Image (cartoon, one colour):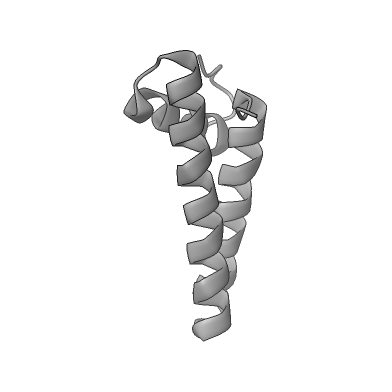
Length: 75
């Protein structure tokens, strides 16, 4: 089942939260959690882009923009 754009936004938020946790407490477990969250996001981006016939790069950037700059509408 392909991920929706909303799924991508949720996964990117989780990756950002995991990154913040790693910055606050840099150890092997927080680094692994960050890596796992980022990997899950990337896999979902590829899946979504393929299902939509879209550019993986554009899909990734739109999801990141939606998370990092929520005042702008992502396409």
